[in-house]
Amino acid sequence: MRGGSRTRAISFLSLSLVILLSIIVEAAQDEAYGVVTNVVDGDTFDVTIEKADSRISSAVERVRLADVNSPELSTPDGPPAMDFTFAVLMNKRVYLDIDDLSGSGRDSYGRLIAVVYLAGLYGQPLASPNFNRMLVDSGHAVLENFTNNEFEPADWWSEQRSGDKSTPLESILQNLLRQLLQSAGSEFDKVANYLWEQLKARLYATTTHLY
Image 1 (spheres, rainbow, N blue to C red):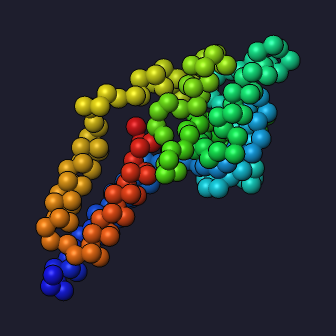
Image 2 (cartoon, rainbow, N blue to C red; image 1 turned 90 degrees about the vertical axis):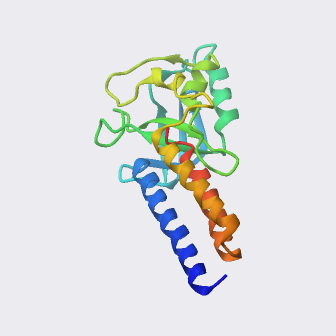
């Protein structure tokens, strides 16, 4: 490949990566994540923060799941609910969608109110089901749609899209990636192909949780 073609190929891939990731970062600007290091009960646990936003002030934050309520530990159903949360979340990375309606994203006890997402094989947040929904589906919590936060729990059961549907942003991404792949197969050298693989991996790890 000639030097000019190589430079144009690399520049094109790099620019595409910057544009796509800027869209993704803007859409996920309020997210934080960390590792669960303590489980208080079924709907409350502590997270050692790895990535924070402006509302997080401590290295370890207590998180209260939004719009769900687990039995108290003093009741017969309380310990099983706690055990379920421990089994699923303990020492695992979780992603936090923190309530935006309140300035601090916290309740009167100072806990972060959040919808919690599990991490996938490559560390990416899994869009569905979120853990709030999982806790309800497992029978270890009841749904309580509090109106003082941003969340709409009914959406948790409708966010799993069928395989033949895609959002406008996903369609744009798919078309662009298809064009890049065709170019990578016909023109790019090893350097450009390496950048292409990096782009695919980064997009896979960051677009899953947008919808």
